[in-house]
Image (cartoon, rainbow, N blue to C red; front, top):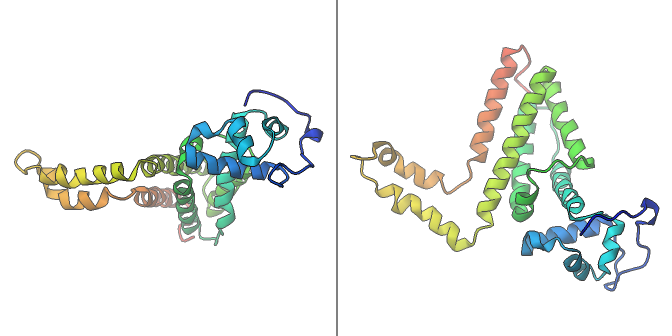
Length: 239
């Protein structure tokens, strides 16, 4: 897609496509998301999207100005899917932990899209809702505004970074993932204590731990630090 502006009142297509469906932003985003997972970033082309939708490629400009506009919509949809599946309980620690785990799981469910979108700022409805919601949880817990923003920033960046990191690993061919996991047994597990005493002493734990994402542990460390910080500034830590 290249830059092209279509008047808002002319954007919605009323006639069905060749496949008998009426185009919408939601349909285009869902189709693009599927194609990205199947083919990677190269799937975001007008020609490929038009073919998948059974529509004239030029009709996509009624909804998105260019591929980056579409990419931001995809990023926002991933956020929206997480928010729709999350229900706050009023316990700020439990709520943020659950939200973080859902965000991470959402990235792994769409690893190629997560890699492409983790570093983007969409300014769209679901992202705005997420910012408002997380800040509300933190301010409701008693964090002063500067602390609420500081912890919000760390929480979101940590989650997105792990989502991208683990998504990149998931996107590897299965044989490559298995080969890398074996390195912890065949290389690190055989290093002698005489030359690498710390690796040798912890080899069995490394072999098990390094096969899995460290995000849950990192999230707990961050939330523990946030709770300690809240106690230091006089807020409540019991949820």
